[in-house]
Amino acid sequence: MTIALRGGIFAEIIAKVAAMKAILDRILIDPEICGGKPCIKGTRIWVALILDFLADGMTEADLLKEYSQLSHEDVLAALAYGAEMSRERIMPVPLGHVA
Image (cartoon, rainbow, N blue to C red; front, side):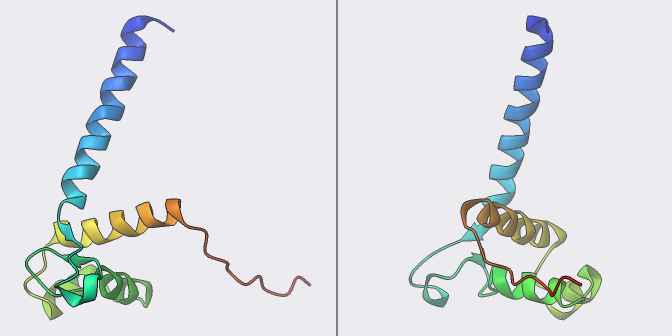
């Protein structure tokens, strides 16, 4: 592997980290707002609420229609936050019966 190739990979990683930070900056955790639950900045909409609706099958379009103060980027931020949190914690998931 050449230095140029390594430099390109490092630059790509740095760009991805910067993009993730920018999108996660849309999330606010403040003890004075919603009891410190992660929310979308400028709202009292919990990240968990967005994730719950999406997990329950609500489309992004329906979510944005129902919560007009949200944007596509806010939904992406909620997904990114959920992804980051899943890297940090292990949640036991019950296994189904193996036949």
